[in-house]
Structures are given as C-alpha cells and as structure tokens.
Image (cartoon, rainbow, N blue to C red):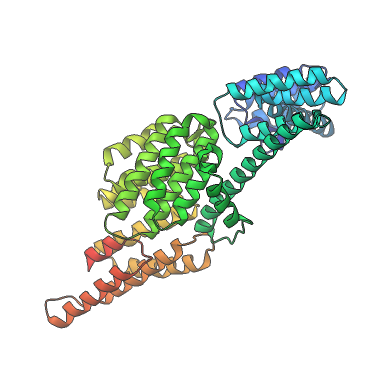
Amino acid sequence: MQDSRLVELLKTLSPTELKELGRWLRSPFANQREEVTRLFDYLADKLDSTKAAALKKETVFKKLFPSEAFDEKRMAYAMSRLNLAAQSWLVFAEQQSGGEAAYRLQLAKALRKRGLEQQSERELRLAEAALQAQPHRNVEYHQRCHELHQQRYESSASRQRTAARSFQEWSDEETIVFAAKKLGQACTALVHKAVSEADLRIDLLEELLAFVEQRQLVAVPAVGIYYLGYKSMTEGDSRQWFGRLREAMRAYSGQFPKAEMRDVTMLAVNCCIRQINTRQGDGEQAFWLGQVFEIYKEGLDNQVFIENGVLSRFTYKNIANAGLGLKAFDWVEAFLTQYKDALEPRHRESAYLFNLASLYFRKPDYDRALELLTRAEFDDVLHNLDARRMLLRIYFDRGEVAALDSLLDSFAIFLRRRKDVGYLRQNYLNLIRFTKKLLQTPLGPDSYREAAREKLRNEISECKALAEREWLLGRV
C-alpha cells in the first residue's frame, strides 16, 4: 500500500486539505460507505509513520475489519473507492479555488439557461464587482473578464447597441488572454531550448510581438511582463530590456498570485543565467551575477520559491552558486543551513552535501570539497556537470595528472552522449580541449615557450563558448 496511487495522492495533501477531505467523505453526497471513511482516518494518521508495517494491507485490513480474515479483493475495493472519492474532492476543490467571481459567473450561466435573465444579470454585476475588488491582474483575471463579457453579449444579443459594446469588450479581453498565454509559452520555449536544445515552434510569434507594440499592450501587466521577459532573452541590448523587466516586476508584484510571481521571478533568473553563460565582455558576468543574486534574495524575502513548504533543490543550488560567484561565503553557508529542511526529504542530504562541497571548493578548501563530493549523489545532469568541473580544477591544481586524464576522457564522452545539456555542451567541451592544451604547453622562460603560451592565451580569450575562462587564463 505504501507505493499505491492512493497513498501517493494523500501524501501530497496539507493538514488543512486532509481535514477538508475528511469532511467531504462524511457527506452522503460524496461517500456512503463507512469502511471508506475508516480507511481514510487510519491512513491520514499513519502517512508520516516511519514503520513500513503500518501501511501493509494486512495491517490496515485488520484495523478496518478486526473480526474478519484478510480479503485482498475487499481491501482493493475500499482503496479504490477512497481514491475515487479523493479525486472527486480534488476536482471540487479546484473549482472552488477560482474565488467569488468564478462562482458567480458559473451561477449566472446556469440561471440564464433557465430563462432567469434578471437573476443572471445580477450575478454578472456581482461577478464584475468581485473581479475589480481582487488585486490580481494576471491572465486568469482577463480570462474571467472575457467570460463576463461573453455572457453579457450572449444575454443582450437582441439589444443591438448594448450587444455591440459587450462584443467589443469580449473581443478585447480575448486578445489579451491570447497574447499573455502565447508570450508566456514563448518564454518557456526559450528556457527549454537553452537546456535541452528542443526545437519548439511558436506560431504567430513575430506577428504577435509587432501587434503588442502597435497596440501598446506592454502596459497590461499580464502581457507586458512576458513581452519584456522574451525581449530580455532575445535582444542584443539585453540590459535595457532587462531593466524594464525588473521595473515591471516591482510595479506589478502585487498584481500576480504568489505561484505566478514565482514563475515571473524564475523568468528573470533565466534571463540572467542565459547572459552569464553566453556573454564574456568586460564586466558582463559580474553585472548579471549581481542581478541574479539580488533577484534570488528578493524571492527568498517574498517566499516565492517555497511551494507547499518545499524549496526545489535546483533553486537551492542556483541561489548558492549566485552567492558563491560574489564570494559571499558566510551568507551562502547560513543559507544552506537555514533552508536545508525545506528541501524534499529524498534529495535533502545529497543536495546539502553537494552545495557545501561547492562552498569549500570556492574558498578554496580542496580537501573538504573532495570529501563532500565523494559522499554526495548527483543524478541531475547540471549537478553532474558541476561536480566534474570542480574535480577537473582540483586535479589540475594538485598536479594529479593520471586522475585528470581519466576525468577529461570520461567527461567528453558524457557530454557527447547527453542530449539535455543545451548550449552548455560546447562550453564544457572547450574547457576540456583547452585543459588538454594547457597540459601540453611547455613551461619555462625561453621565447618559444612564451610564444606557445601567448598563442594559447589568445585562443582562450577569443573562444565564445567556454566554461572557466578566467581559471584557464590564470593557469596559462
């Protein structure tokens, strides 16, 4: 039962949600079987149990039917019925999460179907008031406005003047919804392309960008935030566009729900990371690293990175890396400790050890870093790349040539086999290539050796896609 879909679902629910589901199950409308309620009560109490026996089917069956012999089929039926009831509650809870406006729009539609036009119009007025009173102006807000004006148009279609006004408002809101969703998709496609080289097509994008500019829809928060994000990631003068994006984020911060503000924040972070990995001009990396660090700190202060009490291990790593890039060692160490318990339990220890290894590597304390790296498990491709990069530098700086040669070969094979590293593949392949050249470059004061080193220095400086450029130049 531990690995059943039922237990998997129940474990995702918060204490409040479990309480609401329990009330739902006690309603005759949702459930009329006592064993289903008893099964839920038992599981809700044992979900956090560390004893595997507590969730064995035989153990649970004995609690449900103490005087009966174990019946596999009857146990399966009880589990299935509880799972179906829990899924029905999820649908109900999702419908209720739309708020007052969504509820009144649905009620207005139902009343109009029954010919109760006046009652329907009253609900539409109340829905409009609820929409205007709520603070958010994201795409969901415009979707609700679209539904409101559509219902008003359909209700007043026989009254030509009123219908025309409702139609125009309906059409305008649909345009905003389309633009916001399509630009959001375009931003997501850029991130996927960077990480996995996925060739994702976004139809009508160029036409939409021109339309947004022509109609000045940048001033609409739901559209403008993604328009500026897309421009920040694709235009040459990225600092200007990114500055406008940051201004919009601050101006619109109260107009997006927390979950969507997290997405917007990660959009800004991805803009910075993209620039850090592709721009090598004077001061470029320092500027973008400083920007991403400030975004992360603001996000932590606003708690936008915590979802259902959990901080993603990838966000954990990225925040630590931003601080390490600025040598904020004390801040990073405090952050790693403070937010360790917010990580998913199954990734908590390995993520903490990996990032602690990164901290000691940057200090540098290679002995401590190597000790931690050997204790950490990293199944994520980006963690894997980072670990190999750290080992490369440690082996080189310690003069452990045999270990370094083996690592360089295995690292190159890893990069060529993986299809999910995007633009990072060439950055790391060039790191491997130049490390090998560095090992082969003769040392000493004579002019031939100095010329060889100068040639290598120029090649490294001129290479566009290269990880650890400054480190390589320092070793030349």
